Length: 483
Image (cartoon, rainbow, N blue to C red):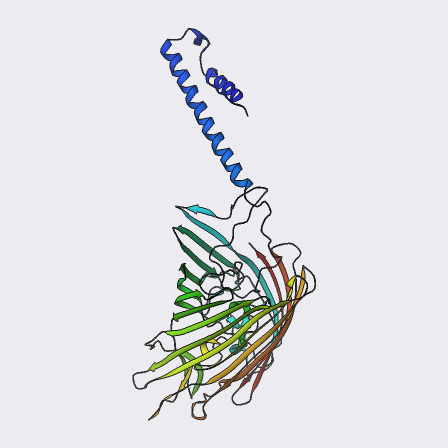
C-alpha cells in the first residue's frame, strides 16, 4: 500500500471524528489534528520498514519444511518423544528441544512459544493399549503393572491356568515439556517428561473412572556438555530399543533404568562420543529364605557409569560399563561388595530408504540385577547367620530385534530376548528366578503422519531355581497419536 493511500485513509479517519464545523475551528485545534496525522504517518513508516526487513530475512532461509519421518523412532519405550540428536548424553540421546519446522513458504521457526527469552515446547503422544493374556501358572494380581505391560518377574509360576484376561488402558500417554534458553556462547536446555504408568503404586481403579496419577519419568537440564537431573542411565543405549506395542518389549534382555545423575559428555571425533556419569545408587537384595527383592538405602557411594558411542555410515554402536559398591546394613548384619557390568549394543539400518534395521544388546555383569530386566535378579543375596556375607549373582542378558519396512507406511519387528542368572550355592534364594525369555512379532501401520496402529503377539517363560516354569501368551493392540 503506497504512502498516499495510507495518508488518505488516515486523514479520512481523523476527519470522521470532527464535527461539521471543523473548517471554522480554532487554529489550535487544527494544529493538534495535523500533529496527530504526522505521528500516525511515522508509525506506518516504521511498520513498513519492519515488514520489509522480515521479508528480506525470510528470503535468505530455506522454504522447504524439514523432513519428518512417518513414524516416531524407538517404539513405545521411552525414546520416542523427540527426534534423536547429539546432546549431552550421547549422539542418540533425545534432544531437550525439538527442531523448529517452517509452516509455510518463507516462514521462519514457529515451534513453541517464548517466555522471558526462553523457548518452551510441548510434545509427546496419546496412546491406547489393549491386551488378551493367558498365564499358565496363575493370574497376576489386580492393578499390578504386570497387567499393563510385559514384566518378566511377574509372570506367575506354580498356580493353575485361569483362562484369558482382557486389559485396556491409556496410562502410557506421555507429555514432554522442553525448554531452551539462549546464552552467549553456551547451550542451556531443560526437559520434564511425565506419563501415567507409575511404578509401583495404585493410581486408580477400573470400576468407574480409570483415573491415574501422572508420574515423573525424566527431569534434567543440560549446560553445554553437562547434564544434571533424572535421565536414562548412562549404562543404557536407548537407540537399541525396538518398536513395540508394549511399554518396553524385550524386557528381560535390556538395560532399563532412569535415575538422578551428573553426566559429562565429550565428542572425541566426528564418529566417537564419550559420556561419564555418577548416578544414584540403590542396592536391591534378597535373603536365602525369600525371593522378595527389597531396597536397602544403605549405599555410601554413587554408581559410576561410562559409555562410548560410535557412529558410522553403516550404523551406530555403543559400549558401556558400570561399577558399583553394594552395601547392606540391617543392624545385626553389615557387609558390602563390588559390582560391575558391561553392555554392548547397536543399531544397523539397511534396505530401501533405511526403512529396515537390526537392533541388539548384550549385557553381562555381577551385582547389577536392578539395571537389567526390570530387576529380575537381585543385586545381592545375604544369609542372616554367623559369618554371613553378601553373595552377588551374575547375569547374562540380551536381545535382538529385526525391523522390516515393507512400505513407507507398513512395517514389522521380530524380537527375541533372554536372561540367565547364576547364584552362589550358599546364596540361592528360595523361589528366585533362574531365567526368563520371550519372543514377539508385530505389525505397525501408519495411515497418516503422526498416527501409528499396531498389533503384536508375545510368548514368554520364566523359570525358577527349583525348575518350575510359568508361561505367558499375550496378544496386544495399540493406537498412538504423536504430537
